[in-house]
Amino acid sequence: MSVNSIENAKRYSDELDKMFAQKSATGFFADNALATKFVGAKTVIIPDINFQGLADYDRDTGFTRGAITVSNTSYTMAMDRARSLQIDREDMDETGIASLAGKILGEYVRTKVVPECDAYVISKLAGLAATRANTVTGDVSKPFEALNSLINEVRANVGFDEDLVAFVDSRMYALLMNSNEISRMITVSDFKQGDVNITVRSLNGVAIIPVVSERMKTAYTFNNTPAGGFTPETNAKSVYMLVCPKSGAHLVKKTEQMRIFTPEQNVDADAYKFDYRIYYDVFVKKSGLDSIWAWIAPEVTISSQPSNASKTEGSISGSISVSASATSGTLSYQWYSCADTEKNSPVKIAGKTSASMAIPTDLTAGKYYYFVKIKVDGIDAVESNVSTVTVS
Image 1 (cartoon, rainbow, N blue to C red):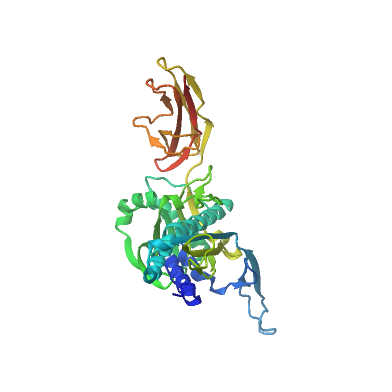
Image 2: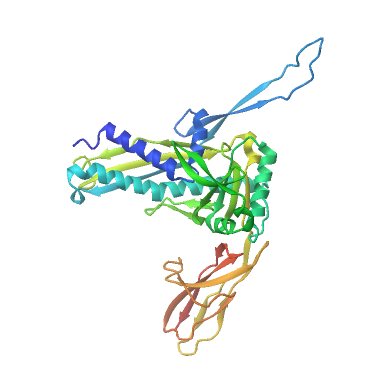
């Protein structure tokens, strides 16, 4: 069986590209990249066109000459990500390799590639909005007002003939859908994403796309470790809502051909090997920098971290505490126990919901680890450092 054939590799790549476009919340931005040109392995050129406005017609001299400025801006893609996947020969017979491989690769794109790309795109756009002070301050009890404010700001910049899209944090989306105002104005409409049309809810023609909270942060670390993946940066804030024109960003994605090796060709293991690699990045043209607006969670500052403590078994007393403040909103607390200072295996501690937590008096000799999650308005959360309680 020629599982390593060019035809099979291309077929897998094409199908994975289609799945990416369909499953990614931000995948439609790839439709805007048609006017880009690759000039190197990681460099693309995106044209930005500017015109001069109208001037008076002069009956003697005629038309006032105007200039058309085409700025071909070079952008370098930052994300070069890859993974090699293996399927043991004993896990399948030869006739089933194509079907099982397709399912495994499709699931990998759906569960690993798409979430990472969504997180990267949204964090980059939100960072751009924050850098240019294109943000609004909303009230979580009035999400409809905040969404309208964002839409109005974008409309003021791009006009009313552009299709807009609103990315909404999943928790904020639930609050939005339960608001009385939007229930009277929401409609269901088609939204083109890649080669398919999906159904979305719309507000005055603005497509509302819910995005899981883990992909709606201002900054991430994209790990270069055996486990890979991505994690929010320590000081990352939640992006409650982000509104921009549907054509406002260019998702440039260059998927390399899948490399497929049979067990006979695989020198590392008796397994089929699939090498998946992707370059991608999102860019905003200079003319569209002020067309992206966001509502970002208030900043929470921890001024005093929980301290370590040493106690004696049988006579434990005292507490550990944290001091925090936010630029707006109401803070709430939830304490957790965990397995180590890296916060592995966290377990919520029932009833421990204040800034201070009494150390359990029934601890036996050993080390115990605790930290607290601090939420603002019950939505965004930051975590404290770990407090180590040593009992002797």
